[in-house]
Length: 276
Image (cartoon, rainbow, N blue to C red; front, side):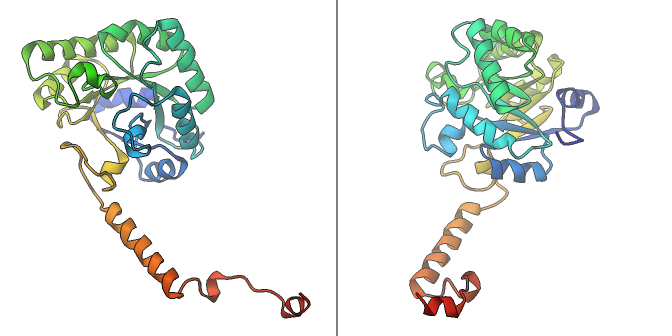
């Protein structure tokens, strides 16, 4: 374990010291190594791997085994950042006992520092049971992509009075159940700021404005690799265009015969070659 490994206690303390939490997704060894080198505080092995890596329209099909696989590859980078792995759709919805068993499996197999559970007050007993089994939990309320069918699609949540009240209640319920941080996704900025002021654990926003205690984005959105990034996604590079340019240049080099050159090839003793 890295000497200065980020802990849940350090992240919780950010709410008091005012230092923003920087979080990002990663799904493999290479991306985890690089984002950790960049100094992020939290790496989420998100079920958004469905959209960014698997080419799926929804996170719903992702399996527990797939999340474990991606969690294992991320942890091979030995990141300094705290790592949380998403519990996929259906893995925590059939009772606290089964949810704990699956969370334990993820925790043991991946070696991650925490799991993330999407859901509000209805899943508070599950959160409490998982935390009670000594597994740290990140919560997730507001827009919850796993429940897109029930929410009417991937759209902003909490714009109406009753919906806003439900999100506040959800955040308070899972905070009381023991999460050490809560992701607030696609909620109006004033609502996110209000929730942040009413709970004693850090909020990490994604499309929730600057009033949260931290921010998280999908790595592919940051790097300009996404085909249709959401409105709230920031972009700090255009690696998609750069990758196309690089591979196109490689293609032309192969077709023209300019690659490989002698420096890319291995030599052989001419006396051995003559005997063949």
